[in-house]
Image (cartoon, rainbow over all chains, first blue to last red; front, top):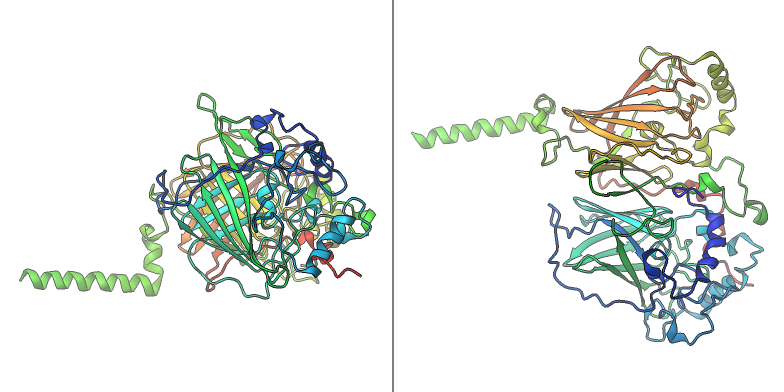
Length: 320
Length: 261
């Protein structure tokens, strides 16, 4: 496996294997992605370094600390049909649900929306239709919020912008209060507008296409939805909590909130292909510096599952 | 007396500003008016797009069913192919309606992504330039932090490994470490994994970049050759990139969730 290439097919195989690791595993990052708790990071003033335009300087590499997108509400229990080896332990011995409001940890779906989610989860293990394949497995952008619980990612900051570079897709977040795109334009990652409030990057996401799904249980928001993201950065530079409120009256009975804990990776961490896919920069005689390398996905895979689910993989896909 | 002189100076200054604002020429003549970073280097931040026909065919060509006419962007007009490579280029041309990697929405590559007829955005900071191409939303990093090329580039990159230095107000980018998966245009011009590109980026005026690229590939070409084209700043009101992950088009209609029967 080439570290710079995202192998979507292999990821399907890798993810359950990763889940089979012991929660006490001490691999890269000290097994940190199996942490069972979510740190508390208060919103407030930013006392750390700032960039010339006044933004808190939070550029760098990050990855989530509790699990991947296999299971949104029981993050360490594994995907549908493939429970992890900790799935049968008492619930409090695994990381909590990413749903932090309501208190029961469940997404407050309307009945029809719940049926759609459950139908996806039921059919995920043995998909017999294209719609039961998790779109990230076909190299689709992970979208909101899945991008923050899959592989590691890089944040770069520029005057009036924060840019997120994921292994599958990227997000450009303008900070200048310009109007959103027209509502008719629906996108995998939606359309983002952000601003800083102390140590919190607040982002309003609209124009989502509702296709990205949150993961392998088929949790979702529709194209009518809106997400208010709060990236609450640790003033000591350890990472951030991604706290996002999802509003969609056509899917949910009430707005609800998810929390995803994210750790910062630095040159003190060992690179690995999952959380910290970097290479040492070529600069002999100087301190270690890690840098990002090119990401490609569809070029390396083709649309995954093409033959099995009737998705053409060898025809032109555009005529422009 | 002193008060009068001050007013006159103010008037002169105001007149000069008007000249800059309304002619544009004055701005061009004063390199100090070009966007610059605090360190004095040009600031290429912005959204750019070529008006040229380069992506249809780098060489001069009359109009045809799948390409508007274009004067070509190759200095001297002809790409110096080795004989066996020219035969491959001609096979590519004949099969361009099916074989062009662009039709799969794959990464356009370097330099093609620069003159593909869609906008791309440059984000610039001291250590690097980040280029996000709307087509496929591909991301290229041009490092300006003094680092050398990577010594291990696996099987090569679609966009290459880009390391840049400043030559006065020109950004000179050395790009190696390619794979051989990309084409140079829709006419089937191509390269091998021995491709070496040297780009020269410089402002013509505050809204126009001169983009020059010298292309070297001893497996395919008999000698280095150079293209030059202009990149225009997209100044449409509130213009922004709109993600274009066109490789999802074959399957995106499977989502969102459909009604359960």
